[in-house]
Image 1 (spheres, each protein chain N blue to C red):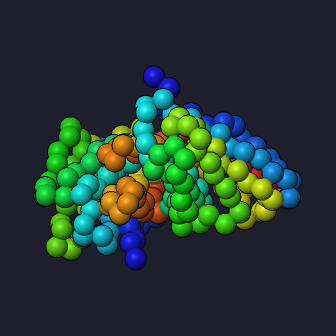
Image 2: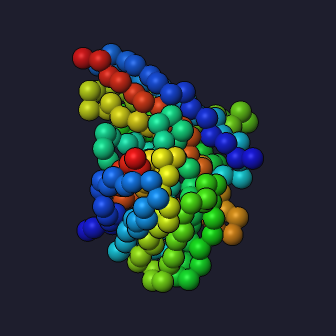
Length: 110
Length: 112
């Protein structure tokens, strides 16, 4: 019973590098979300998707991109990493009730 | 705009009751949630309350909802050291998609 799986768990990037955070869910959920968590700031929504092929911006989308080619996968791409993107990133999915979270990906940009 | 507010820290002694408070702004929220985050882990659903309820009890947990004041609270009876975690209040609303708005989280520290 995997639920929501994120990789990698930890990553250190240099300024200007690019990377993709992977997220996959096996619950056949239509709704998927990417959040970032900064200390004392709660969770901020980066991007969300209501189904395969449909994505939209959340509160803090700048510097990120997403795609949703399948129901299961919702990768988050950072094109030009900046120190302000140092954070813990959470992927989540739902069908409108409980929101299921992955374990998180801790990203440090130096 | 929508906003969910919580105090950042709470410290209690083992065996005491903990009360974590939350205020929200979206009166159309159908459900209100409490999530628990242990160190280094993702958020897990602790309990929830439907918006037409005033109270929900689930073992050591009691959720109180005051819709008039848009105030939600989580009471943990007989708090244990294993309850030390960050607790997030969240509301859900629907506007083309399901939007979950989270509070800042309350870090609960249980002293032995």
